Image (cartoon, rainbow, N blue to C red):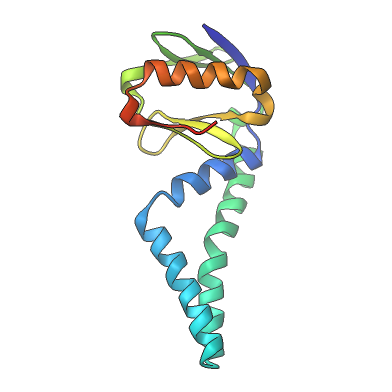
Length: 158
């Protein structure tokens, strides 16, 4: 069993939102099209097209940053640290009186970013394990996740 406490902040939520959002084909396509519009607009001296491309490329990351900041500031769930417990049964998240256990077989996938490890507990929600807060516990957490989740659901890079 591994236990740890984490305080999820704006940067952690932004990291999650980036991974979630850019995991969708349409959003990646929009960014590529925006970049193409910038390049073509500058090359062909069609500056309005370049500006539109710039807005498309910048809009999503800025919106995600703003939304992450709002959620971190306003959501009661992120005001206090979360307590995580990982064992062979599943992942338990608790805060104050509230506690929820998600069985490993119910987890959708586990992925990593340079900033965190994310265990998606639903199609839209994830448990965030910030690397900078977990230090020497991170290898144990990754090992626990990898041992208890199906290998086809785990894509974690150390």
